[in-house]
Image 1 (cartoon, rainbow, N blue to C red):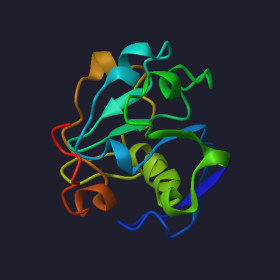
Image 2: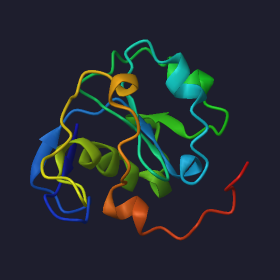
Image 3: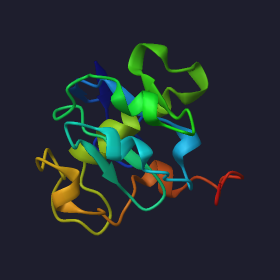
Image 4: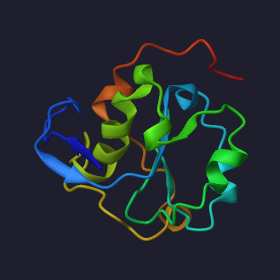
Length: 135
């Protein structure tokens, strides 16, 4: 279980949400999408610089982790300490009002039907460009 805040800092706790698999920093600026193609629940949503797993829609099968060429997907309990911020950040993508949107994304019921969201969390948007871009 993860807590996250209502502001732009996903480390400011005040809300609780269950999380299963988490997409971490190796995905930022790569957005390979091999995980998205393998996901039977269609719960991996596309931002601008990263992908995000919707915990409410995830069936916890691990297909995404196996398909990820960047090794960016971790089960929440296996996240390295240096990647822990992505646990709250993945949850914030769905629960907080993102820049340019009028409401939280919530659980839209399928990433493919929705298409690219066109925005990232403030945390990911504020990261410097990653050296792996274009890989």
